[in-house]
Length: 525
Image (cartoon, rainbow, N blue to C red; front, side, top):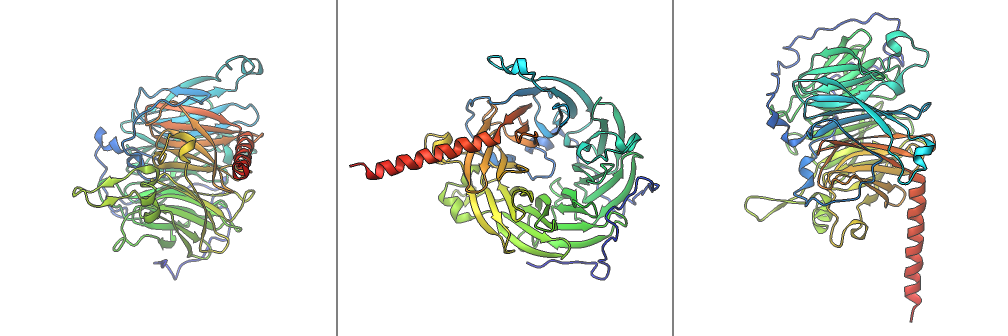
């Protein structure tokens, strides 16, 4: 696999780690529509959203198959209902460590975004039987003309010494009508509306200060804004717009952890590295050959490896490409989809499609979620999740990538026999200090995996089997507990609390008991 760079003569890196000073004047850039490819806005028909929307992953809706809806226990601590039964496509959460209060933003197919304030349960209420759920209040942020597709808070990136607009906590809401709404994360008051892209696929905050916002669009462009002044700083043009039917453009994006570069993945199969100061594309990694393989990149993560210079992008071809940004080279191609293994297991958890002739089985392939383990866990580990319902943990120590574990629920854990039909994986998140992965699925459950051995340690069900989780955000309390918030296709938002440490201990005890029982059976006459 080769990487290509159209600007080999101009690949100098920015000298300074920060590209925007709070003291500098922001310069507004007004792009020429011709330079951006002259893409026409997508049709605004509601039926275009039948296949779902997401904020950086691909279309995982089809991965669920025609699952029979069953009733599962509702383990959520709280259910938020605001979107009138319409699918919730986007969710973002922020846990205030000083107060323990949780702020949740949600966006859905009803063209609305809401802000929810969740107050922690008091010790008296928590001691009641049954415990009282946390108190919450909700406020509508906006009513747009199309789906709210992506959300993000800037609270974790704000400089504690910042004042005025630079220190304001904001929620950004990207919409399929081409607008990005900025809202006060405390009051819900509208701060500004940013225009520019066509359909907004994702929004991501700059990690140094949280005053710069990156947004990607189906028209093949990515836009960068200075939010205190509501000005456009750059328009990154280079990704091809895709198939012209809403299935192309920039699928995901982020800033590198040091803030020096912007990174975007596209449905043209490329991963692109951008210089925010100049807007120049520093490098193009061609991870999917459009002529021989086809398909686009669906998801993206950065900050991996001992030096933090690794990035990973999942593709519709069933692979995930790992690149070294500073070295400008592809270092690994992780084959998440294994056709022979998937066929032997009945197509994984994602089900199978049969062609019209009824002879050939077409298995789902796309990688829909990727994530690097934090350095405190293991800087060499990465994870991929696919529409086949499998989570895979990879070791990148030796460069090429070695599969450590393929995480699939055992039939005995949740079913009566055969393969557990989980549907596709829609999101992944690592625990910050434990070798634990949280994965959301198209069957409406969140599963917690021990990344050391691939053991399933917990299953968080919301009582809505068959309703896909479109988005997931996870916040971690100081004691290591995971606060999991999911956006569900049935119009609900579920809030779970998982004591990951206790779940790990319980799973370890169960494994020891199973081993002991197996040994006893061996010696039994």
